[in-house]
Length: 241
Length: 361
Ligand code: HEM
Ligand code: SF4
Ligand code: SF4
Image 1 (cartoon, rainbow over the protein chains, first blue to last red):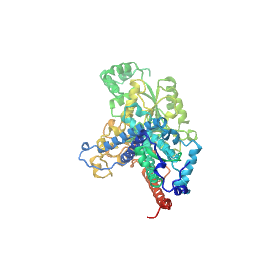
Image 2: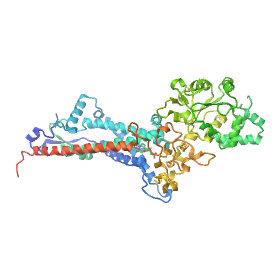
Image 3: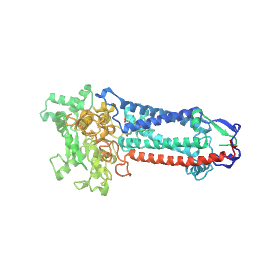
Image 4: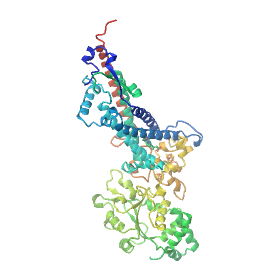
C-alpha cells in the first residue's frame, strides 16, 4: 500500500531507486493549478490590503487631499482581489465534480473510516513525529484536504461578511445576497470586527501551509512545489495511492 | 376634532398664503416633488387633524428634546398645531386620571386612525416593574396603544434597538418596540435622532398618509440609506490616506479623517453629514470628534469609542483582534520552527541510513 519514505527498511535494501521504478502521473489539472495560484495571490493581497484598511498608515503626505488617492487604491485592490478569489472558488467548486480523481470533492470531507485512519496516521507520524512510518500520498492527504475544507468555510465567512460590507457601495443585486448577516453580527460594526478577526485565520493557514509544503519537499522528496506548477508527480511502482 | 387641517389652521389665524407655504414645506420634508404640492394641498383641505399619542418608556427624553428643536419653525409650529397631540407625558397639560382618560378616549374614538410615537425601550424583566406608568407596565401599555394604531414610530435608539439600557448585561431586559408589536414599526434610530429627520418622518406620515420606504431593519431609506462616511466632508482625506493620529496633532488641525481616532462613520447609517444638527450648524465630525455610531444597534457595546475595532470578547482588557491574532501567529511560527528543527535532526539519520550501503569513494 504505502511506500515508506523515511527510516524504512526496504528503502535501504533496494538502495537507490532506479529511474525505471517511477512513472509520471498528471495529478493537478490546469483548473486546479490556476485555482491554487490565483487563490494564493488574492489571499496574500487581501490580507495585506485588509490589514491596511483596518490600520491605515499615514504613508504619504499631500498638501491637499485631492492630490492623492492611495488609500482608495488599497481598497480597490482589496475588492478586485476579493472578486478574483470568489471567481476561482466557484471554478474549483465546479471542478470538484468535473475534474480528475485527485480533484474530487470526496477528498475534502472526512466521511470514510479510511480518511480518519489516514488523519490519525498523519498526526502520529509527520505532525507529532512519534511514529516513523510515513506514507506517500499522490493527491491530497486526508488531513490537508480536511484543512482545505475548513479554510473554504472561512472563505465563505469572509465572502459573506465582505459582501455585506460591500453591498451598500454597489447597486448590483448579487452583492446584496449576504445582507442578512448584518443584523446577526450586530450591525456593520460587528461585521467589520469579525471580518477583521478572520484575517488571522488566513495568516495562520499561510504559515502552516507554506511550512508543510516545504517540509514535504525537504523530507519526503515529493516534489509538491513543482507539481503545483507543472501538474506532474512521480509515482513509484507498487505505490497505489 | 373632526376639523380638517385647513380649517384648524384658519381658526388659528393662518392666512391662505401661509397655508400654501406650509404645504410646500411639508411636501419637501416628506421628500415629494414640486408637482405633488397640489396633492398635499387637497389632502390638507380634506383630512382631519390626525391624533397622535407620544409614549415615554425607558428613556432620557432626548428624543423629545431634539424634536422640539426642529429647525423649520414654521413646519414645527404648524405641525404641533396641526397634530392633535392627545397624550404625551412630558408636554401635555392634564395630569393623573385626566391624562390617562385622554389616552383612553383617543384609543377608543380614533381607533385605526391615530399615530403612536414611542420613545424608549420596554423592560421585560421582573414582569416589567422597571417601567410603570399609571400602575401599568410599559409592555401592557404598549400593547393596548399599538393594537389599533394606524402607524407605530419608534423614536431613537432606545425604541429602535434598546440603546444604553440594553447594553450588556441588559439587567432590565430592555427590548425594542419592533420585537413586541406585531405590525410594521418605523425605526428612527439615533441618540437622539436628528430633529429634522423626525419632523420629516412625521410629515411623510401626514402628507402621504403611508409609511415611507423602509430598509431591512425598518429605517426610512431617505434618511438612513447612506453611511455618515459616504456623505462626510472629510471623506476626501480618507481616500487620500490622510489621517488624524492624535486629538491635538497637526493633522487634527488640518481637518484630516478621524478614522484612526475610532470614527464610526464607516459603520453608521444616518443623515448627520447631510441634514446636520441644530439648524444645520454642524455635526460631530465637523466639530472635530469622530462619530460614535449612535444610530446603530448595540453601539454602547462597541467600546472603546476611540479605537477602530472593539475588544475581543472573553480575552480581557485591551485585547484587540490583532493582538489575539498576532499572538496566535507567533505561537504558530514557534511551533513550525520547532518542528523544522526536529525534522532536520531526523533527516540526518535518514540520509545516513539511505546511503549506508554506498560504495566508499
Ligand atoms: C481572505 C479573505 C479576506 C481577508 C483576509 C480580508 C480582510 C479584511 C480586513 C482585515 C479588512 C479591514 C476590516 C476593518 O478593520 O475594518 C477588510 C475590509 C473589507 N473587506 Fe475584506 N478580506 C477578505 C475577503 C473579502 C471579500 C471576499 C470581500 C468581498 C467583497 C471583502 C470585502 C471587504 C470590504 C467591503 C471591506 C471594508 C472596506 C471599506 O469599507 O473600506 N473582503 N477585509
Ligand atoms: S471622519 Fe469618519 S466619517 Fe468622515 S471620512 Fe473619516 S472615517 Fe469617514
Ligand atoms: S455623527 Fe454618528 S454619533 Fe454623531 S450624531 Fe451622527 S450618527 Fe450619532
